[in-house]
Amino acid sequence: MYASRETAWCSCSGCGVEAELPAEETAGVEVPCPDCAGPMSELWSWESAAA
Image (tube, rainbow, N blue to C red; front, side, top):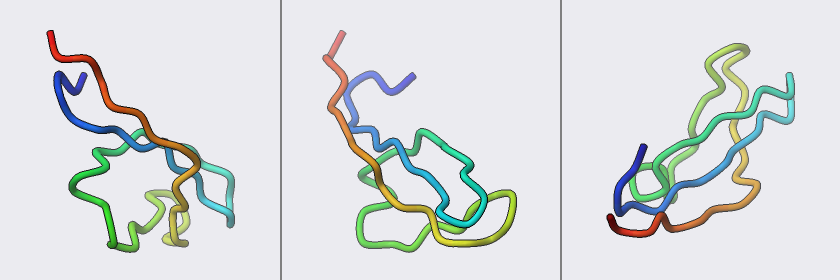
């Protein structure tokens, strides 16, 4: 769980895999799919509430 980070929900257009990734670390970077190595696309993001 990300306590106070923005999180992005991403999907691969090649094989349909979905993943939750830390948005701060993946912004502006093409993230490869762990299953088929195709590019992941951000579907939406949110910022978690600080605990």
